[in-house]
Length: 121
Image (cartoon, rainbow, N blue to C red; front, top):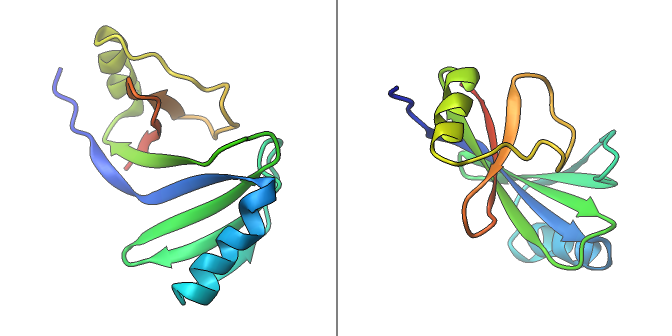
């Protein structure tokens, strides 16, 4: 099986609630990047801001139950089912309990714990 993974355009930074406002201010007021709060309905993310970061988008996600920040990355593939089967054969399991996802997407992690959102191009 030949599955080709590509980096997606989205980067999510999961930020503890007690550091969220200062972090948003850093991107908006110090780095002077385009920052916009966006509505969100998610059981684990209470607020989110979209940051234009060159051709990428950084999502600053406020998570009430985290004690430290995490960076989550996006991976795209031509076929999610084939990529998931390939990953499972390679010992990589999905972790879809992390956050709600639309159908045909999965969460996976690398051995160091970096979280990736796997989705179709």
